[in-house]
Image (cartoon, rainbow, N blue to C red; front, side):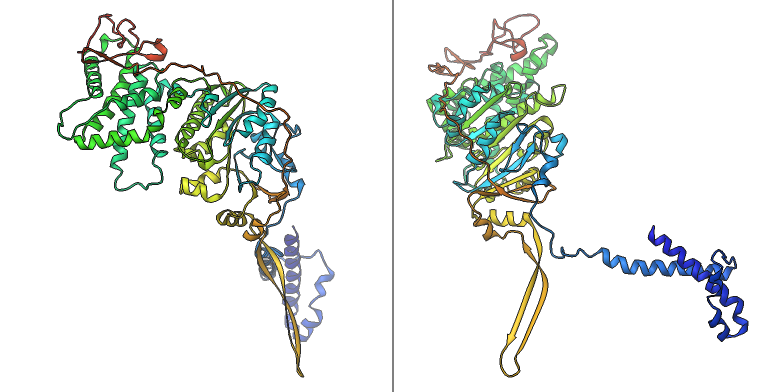
Length: 613
């Protein structure tokens, strides 16, 4: 508006001067100079002569150029922010992201909390929490949030301390408590990954389970060559898992899988030697050929089962392409990976499912995963556990009319590096918010995640709108936090003085950029303080949350029967007079899809018994 006024004023003045000069020019230059402003005495007069109008327009253009020259340079200047604009946030900066109901919040510091209503705040509830050992990750972050009792919880509990301290309080608040205990198996519920396979995409679930298992049993060895051995092991494991699932109506388990593997043999001397399992899959191929010859003669429920067995047979045929020596190596290598599943207590733990991962979003639940903190023998099981938790509840949310779970689920994944690597976790964390699921990744230092997830780690961190630093001096962590905090602009004052007969003194000031906190300053952060960063808000330097007090210690009684009988051999194998046959486990049609209970074979429309010798 102001520039428009100046433009009109410039046009008016130039028009009048041009008019006066033009009309008095023939009277001489001296006269023009004396009377150049005479027309200003008639302020409403505007000359419409072409030359006078042109002079006015020229004045407007000149005025605009002067204004642009003056202001464009000024626009590119940020006084006081030349080298960075970082500064600490005020408590009021968090107000738009909090909730009036203080219990409906995810707590981060003694003064900052984030509303659970992510649609209102436009911030997800995923958080990256970093703190060295003893910095209070459990005591000053997890426990205060469990005390809120505002959602369902899935908690990694490395020492079992959280279960002991918070279990009774959560139970009193009406929570359903479930525990998967990989430290004290006798105090654990049972977990069967195959029980959570989606019947409509069981082959996909089988492949995901295999990928997770192979990835997390690789140890520290790098993958060499073209990964031939891993691919062969994947094919064999896919075959065994899918065979167990589709022949036992969803009642099979990894125990059955490891028992199948234990009965496999291969010979370097006799390439044509066949093991019991080879004969089993020959029978499967015959059953598939039987179906293909006359599919109309089979019951409709058998189709999905046959398709699943077709997948199992195809994977097994891939394994069979190797020479005897190759097959023997694959069997041995996969057997080594599955060695922990031969433990009697582990077999009992995985033989059935009483933990109910599918109920965490429909019933207010506190689900504890107790893992050992002194060894990594069971990391692969912890990874499979979380994989099934996410996959199952994402599916349930998608098939709920609201597109979300009934109860919001918060996952506090303490000692994240000890859980194992979850395939496609970078994708899951990006989409779980809309389904009512959030994850707090809790770890000792930043480099742990980088080492495990490589290039995908940046994607995972980028999907955490909250970052909480509780203290530590590990180099990669402090350098990362310092970089995220950014730089501020400071004034540097320099003085110089020389003495003597011609002594002098000078003083100068200049602006410099400096980290809000340097890496070494972060390493010296007082024990009672923490740094909290929320996307789109300046960082907070605040006091840690006060640790809640829980007066009652809790002892969990698992739902797993104490004397669960384990079958000596898997139900999917039957041995009669040296002949091997496919034994179809009877089950309900919607569970098994292979439902002729009189013969334990896929149902046929003529109800005739079919046998394989």
